[in-house]
Image (cartoon, rainbow, N blue to C red):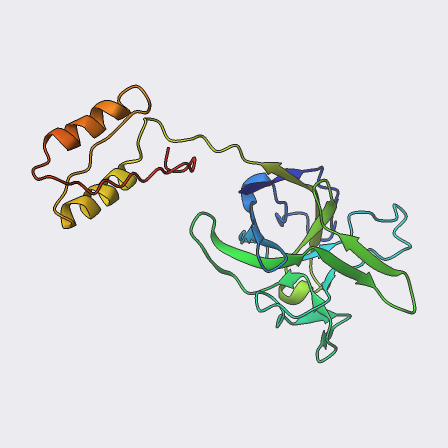
Length: 237
């Protein structure tokens, strides 16, 4: 199992026209999970002044002469594939461009109201008549969450860039303490009782022969059917 972490970098831009609006995000405002759908589900806390978010490239021209493009999913995803976007005062509709953005808050058990974006392993940016390409989203990838004061990623209001780096770490799972898993003991005990028998615990070679002897000594009759079931999986100890 994997856990995914954000390292939030310096927040670098806030429109000077709206100095009293708080569009900043930090690591406590994120949750991300790897998905069998081929990517990651990202949840971003809905803060009072933030009414939409989108993901862009992490690099930008310091002179702001070149565009920093919004990232797109090559395919439709139900998490945010139906979101509308406003650009230059017009709604972009019916173009098959699945921008990684969200303006529709939903409930999250830890963060409360959140924006939800699905990030595929391969994302697109740019257009044929300009700069374009693909980015593979892996451990160490730099991205940027742009937060907006208006819905639909509308640049008619304030916006702010929140760069971050995606970190993926392998989780070391601590094995349960004790020699036996209680769930396994209950299960095998129930099987034995249904067959009119009894389940005995053995810690291994130290007392295995003794336990078998106890079963034989208590058996009446001239014959005995004895079945030994050895479970060698680590999960069952």
